[in-house]
Each structure stands twice: as structure tokens, then as C-alpha cells.
Image (cartoon, rainbow, N blue to C red; front, top):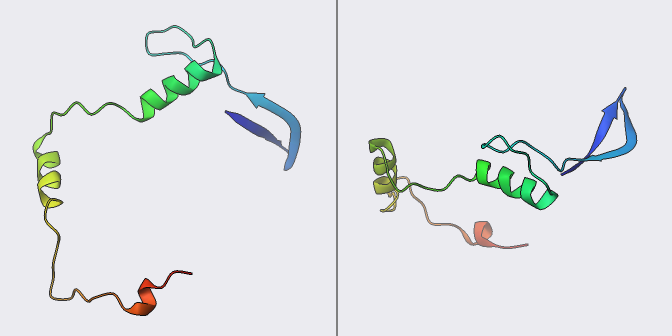
Length: 82
């Protein structure tokens, strides 16, 4: 990850690159590639497949389309692409 450093309202010309972070096992990453993978693994956790009742209800609710009396078809103007 590359980011400029803000100091006193002016952009500092130095660029810092984060290459090392501490992994969950306490060791540190050794490359930018490994650092990115550890961050992505943390952000996008693997789905365990075990749903609680809340998740089951959400999945069930999205299986069928929602139709209400107020539903109106899209107009040609709404469908137009630019």
C-alpha cells in the first residue's frame, strides 16, 4: 500500500510503503505480497457455512422476489443508457 503523508496542510513528497505487518500467529510478513494476502484474508473471511437463525432468515427472504402493489414497470426513459 502506498500513501502520501499529510503534514501541515501540504503534501510531503516522501512516499511510504507498508510491507510488514504482524500476522495472527505473532510473526511478521516478509513481503508486500504476503502483507496484501494477510490483509485480504482478514477482511474477507471464509464463510463457515454455519448460519445462525438471522442469516437463515435473510437467505430465505432473498430467494423470492418482492412484489408490492406499488411496484411499477420501468419507463423507457429510466432504461435508457447514456
